[in-house]
Length: 261
View: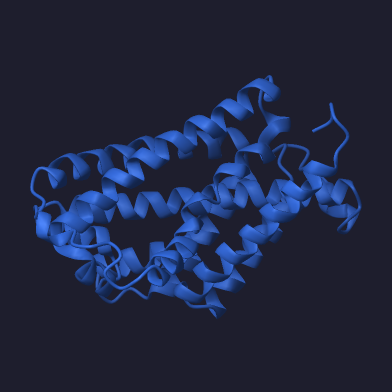
């Protein structure tokens, strides 16, 4: 989903570029980065995350200083159903937090650092999301936002920051795809070790130290989805699948004996 979002941002910024071609190119790049090594991937992601947060903070600060209160209106003006529908779709923005736990074997003191990292990331992201959404809606209203393929850039155009937000959108979606391949490859790797998928997928590259087969598998699946599914359908499908997975995971956790998990 994020790779198609990247393609839409790039296509909006540079007319003539195919969104799907850009998305496919991004998948290739992030798959190669993940194949080369975890440290390189983590380093690149840290730089990108810092940059995109800075972009959103600047946009939120300038945007909130120039909002039109009339653009907010009544959030339930069309009833509760559209709000719930949007909430289900927006859940996609929160699916990355559990992915932190998939890196437990590659960090120090995971029992302490992983829970802290998840909670801190959730708190920071929630604040950034709220400020960004308030600024975007306050600047141009939800109607114009819904009509744009690059809504934040459209909102930023009202305050002369469209180029900055295009860059931020590209960075944000790049980061999501990068960590998606990283996290999903580790899930496949764990499944392979438990022989839930073919065992050969658990092999680690001798020189690079990465689960090369599961990285390539994750990249391939992502590339196929990019070529065959449209953005809105894929976002909805992703949210449904993740919600179902979380329900099953939490149910399984409740069945664990006390003191385990």
